[in-house]
Image: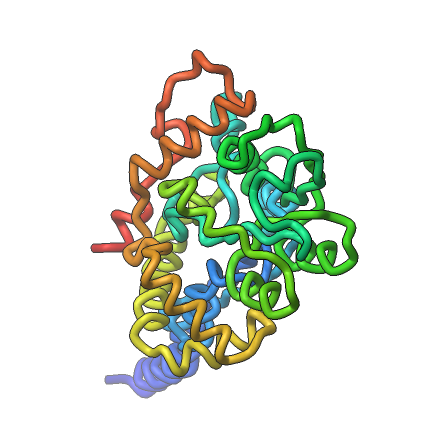
Length: 323
């Protein structure tokens, strides 16, 4: 072999050896917004801490917001790629040609407790009071009618104010600016310890309700199918790890939820015993139908609109993640 060809071969081999480590460590950066620091997002924080995202070739940056509306704005704008948030706005927009889609489930029933000021002892006592909700278009807003019915009064007998996520509601309860706010654990545990009244689990009034879910904009996701599938696979691993390693998860929960290890552990135990989370990230027909029905009752969707999950759900990414 001529010396020139041999030298060229050696140079090419050296170039490949130099490039290979860079290719091996090349990762897709994702900005992932979540609504607040609550237990629903523990699978994502777990996947991040355990390196599951990195093993999937993803550099995931989880950003905490205080509501879903700005999250959806950022998804549509393309500044953020995958969200873990509430789904009502996604459903409503889908019937108007919106491009946001639910691709996996996290919480299939509401893990909230009805937390009220100390002097409020029954649901009936909420009549005439102020209820703080995350937004007028989604989430806890749609449970007001169920609470009113159980308390024996009409929904318009209470004042509903959109104030933001659970941490904000906790602060406003302390400041006595709202009389009641639905709080997920561990915030509900903390509220009880501070003397607020726990009027019961919302899941008893609404046993099936697709709550926090994984959401994408199809304009981006359809061009990045492998990335979405890789994210979902790592998220599922995070969910499994979270339940399999209680002590470690309680430590992480205490850090991310800004609570005590005891409350974080209790939150994990309640999540398991109340069957709050979709362990395999699946979406159930019953939980989606319940959301759809409540939205129609609240006037967020017209009564004649048919229930067509294909308009707002795309489970093909989840199916691909399971291969």
